[in-house]
Length: 380
Image (cartoon, rainbow, N blue to C red; front, side, top):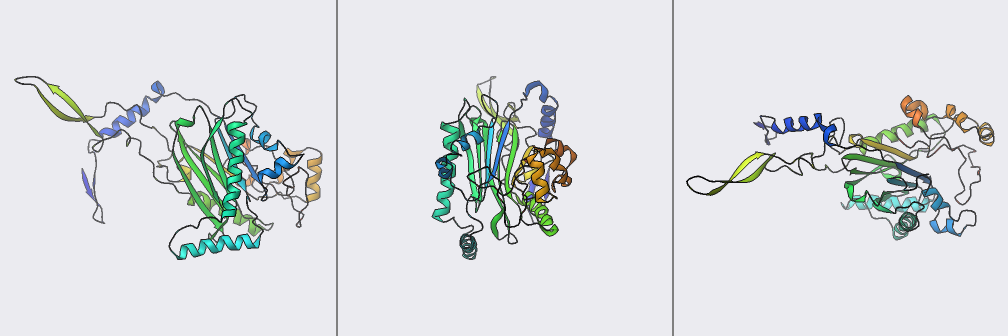
């Protein structure tokens, strides 16, 4: 069947829907040949306030913290996937750094060269963290199996690194990255999100590390919600191979060589439906998606410094913390009312604190006397 588009394009379709019939039959019988198993994902999110990894190692109190932080799972073998999302890898409060980043990005766009490369100092900062994480997970891991880097990317102060355990690393494919800026109306990457997607076996995963708008007012709260929506809608990836593309030839048909004997021996090419569909990915994406958008993926995680606050005074909040009644703080959380009740049941226990001193666990007052509730909502 042929169809002509208004723009003059001609599309050819399988009028008998043969491949669709094969797909539906495989889908109906998937339980007979497909194996399902649970995997564990560990997400580590931290606003590091521009600290360098060597500063942690030089500190007597924090020496060994990074290894302990990355090895938080109680499993001997460790989770199959570890995702590390850092915010404020560079000092976002530095006017000089912000001006440099914005100027380089703007001038690069004006010249038609796309996104500008980060300065050597910023690139070195990302490199230090990548090396530190790789060292802790590949060579000094607390788990019995080492990890390999699936992908590692950054955008201004944001940094995300995905690791896969050695025994599943070769099963990871279709890796891609997306950047969404929300700072200064989408011009600056001091706020925004960086997403990494991949397929593990036949299940698609997408991880976003985000840094949302700061501020105390209701308007700032609305901006955080808008930034979140912008990141989710704006996260875009290259279209991966379709479910039959890897094994389909000639528009869904495969050539087979067939030998025939009769008055004479001859060989001819016959076009017939694909016989071997063992490697076809079934239902890798959801809701009719093709893997180009965040919500096309079967498993989605949205984490980072979301900047939602507690509707409570600092003095009252500190009393809850000192009494170790952290769950009691959830009723004042600005984010929980915005997400589904199903998500509330899976929200990790709150680790509320003031703006942290990067080298200590001590609560530190801020000029606004605020309580930040960050990095606690790991999945969205």
